[in-house]
Structure formats: C-alpha cells, structure tokens
Amino acid sequence: MRKWSFTEAILVLIVCGSLLIEAGALIPPRYDGFVFGGGEEGKGTAAEVVIEAFYDPLCPYSRDSWPPLKKAIKHYRSHGVALIVHPFSLPYHDNAFVASRALHIANNLNSSTTYHLLDLFFKKQERFYNKPTRHLSRAAIVSRIAKFATKALGKSSLSDIESAFEDSNTDYQTRISFKYACSRSVIGTPTFIVNGFQLPDDGSDLDYEKWKKIIDSLLSGNVVD
Image (cartoon, rainbow, N blue to C red; front, side, top):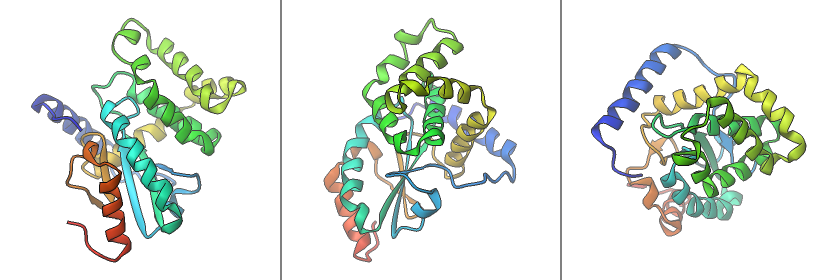
C-alpha cells in the first residue's frame, strides 16, 4: 500500500463516515465477501484461521500483494485456513466501483468464476483507468467491463451480466462491501485482517514467507505480534 496524501486520507474518511451514518443499523442478509474456493461466507468464517483481504480490483498495490497470498491460501486451505476477499472501491480510482460490482455479479451468477475475474482485473488493470477511459461515458465503461467479465463467465453470459448491471441489488451489494470495510476502519488497499485483527504491516510488503510465518504461528496456537 502506497503512502497516502493527507487529502486522500481525509477524502476516504469523509466518504466512509457519511456512508456509515447513512447505513445506520443496516445489516445485510449474509456476510460480505467472496470465499476463496467457493462456498458460503459463513463457512469461511468458521475456519481456524480466517484471512480477510480488502482489495480494490483496479489498485496496483492490491494486484502486487495477491500472488503471495494466493499461493499461501492454496497451500493452507486443507489446514483450516480460509480467505475472504472484500472488494473496496477507492474513490480516487477511476471505475473501481464498476469493477467491484462486476465481481459481485460474477459471484452471483457463478461463484466459481469470481476469483478468475479478479485475476483478470489484476492482469489487465491498465485498460480501465487513466487514458484508456478518460473520454468514455459511464455507460460505455459499464459496457466495456461487462464484456470483459465474459472472459471469466463465458461469452454466452453477456446478457445476464448486462442485466445484472441494471439490477439495483448488485449496486447494493457493492455499497455494502464498501460500508463493511469502513466499519472495520479500512481506508486503503490492500488491507488484511486476520482472525478479526488488522495486520500492522504494510499489506503490499507481505511476501509468501511472511504469510507462511504468520499462518504457521497461528496454527501452532501462538499469538502474532
């Protein structure tokens, strides 16, 4: 995670604060996020070690932190370790909300494709911000991302994806993800919460060996400083 400017930090705090006030006592029908490997989010939280990753699909720092975490989760999944990714659309990342919404749509249509789409966003981020989209309308961006999502869900899914972008429920789900992150004091990406506590280290600096050390310690019953 890069160093934040004072203005950026204040912007996110203001947005988070206003959304939390707006949300009030709002409780979503299910736990937010996408469980790695599929399955219900409730099952993910029942694991011995639960890692929650807050990712912006168009954030380069999220992208860079993903391969070592993915490798660790693949290694430890059978040892009682679960990963839940929460999409967190940073307000200064162009089109991040639309990309996050696409992840929710993929998860709704076929949960086995969610992480494939996340991988694709990380590989092709540059298509969806700055110069390539500077002069595009909101509708054009949604159309471009809907077509991009078919790379994960299949070409025949385009009409379903486009319909889902017209469905207010997917907008609601994406907002809930943002509000949930704010409720956990998340203001940047990547941010990692392990067994309910936020890791103090800069998330983008966590390589595979650091993840292995953290997980091994927790599985051994030790406290991680």
